[in-house]
Length: 288
Ligand code: PMP
Image (cartoon, rainbow, N blue to C red; front, top):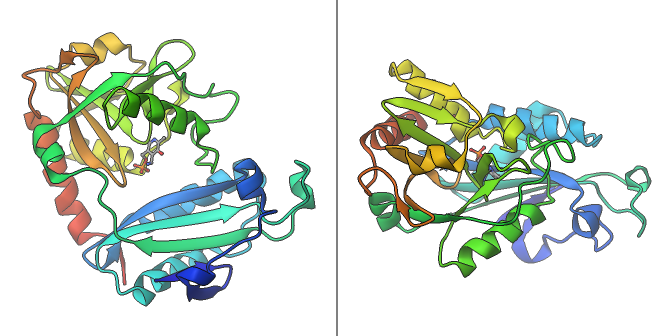
């Protein structure tokens, strides 16, 4: 496997960065997870825009133009002969001292890994996920803005530990007010009486690109979508619940905290949205 590190493509074994990098020492950096479908990089421009926005928000200047970054991503896919896969694009603060001061760090490191991914086994897409609400409260949105996709994922990791300990692969995270925020690595949606609802980013949700695309496709299909503050109650009584994310795509949730959702089986609207999404993803993207 060829990995891109700050201007060069190197073998996997040589893909190393300094132990003094603040990405490692403090989780100081930003990242994106991107899909490759049918020899195209899906939503590449949107991912690059979000990466640069996240970087701007943490005062990190990415040492490349967006167009250069897009080509570096595409070239990494080509170098690994990938027609389908997953890209992890990371920008760290760079090598610094043992102190916190980011202004003492040298150049940011840009890392691009392109590989295969399978987040959930196929049968979970057919049968749906069972999830639980975890006690780990989502980061306060005014402490770390949830729209920043930073390397500091400890909040999500703690939630994931609780999920796995409870025998689940995903979980529901609430914010400091007890409102629905998102899953540990995905956005959450509910469907009730034909209407689709999802919490706004200000409740503690990353502004997911899959989420945004699903909203757009749903509206084009004539469905009503609303961003609304949600309580767990709204999920418990929903006809359908589903999660969205780059790696997970669209996956049904059929049980939350031992309440079965709707019929207890993946819902019709979720299935329709998953079909629309996969058709769109197969035919759109940055050509490799
Ligand atoms: N929320 C969190 C916390 C995430 O890490 C992700 C990405 N895995 C998402 C939501 C979904 O975002 P996207 O659709 O852009 O992948």
